[in-house]
Image (cartoon, rainbow, N blue to C red):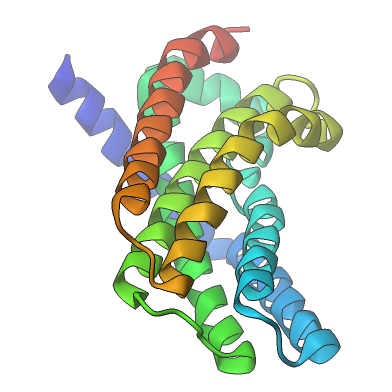
Length: 221
């Protein structure tokens, strides 16, 4: 069973990569959106205080993640969904979408922080801890919006539903991310930083575990 799940997941993951490589529309649009938003912030502010710098970056990443991870299921038409339903298990389908969305989100986050730091500086005392926070944030946001994309796709690709459902799920994650990342700017990554990191890891496990339990019922609807 586990071998079949691995094979199905790997096959679907290769399918996602091949389709994206052929079109390149999604990645290009997402990168342009994120980078243009960063440039607008630079043009409007030029310089910011570290807390504002940090909070503004996570606001950019939340809206970018909606465009990045939300496309995972919403870009599939009904004919392709029916075909995949007969060829692979729901768990393999979700895991492949989650992995692909996570990779895109991590790359998008690293590209955004590079340009953001290039234009507005990088006032971080612990860059290794901050980069770890970025990766954990990207993984959590991709997990949330991948599940919500599956729900919205079954409701006629309703982006309004995606935004409404995403707000209460994203807020706790963003609160922890801002608090943890802010501590890396002020040089206070001690016990509180470890607790925030554990909280982010636990939230990710809960989100992914819940998604794997709920997704088969969504997919069979």
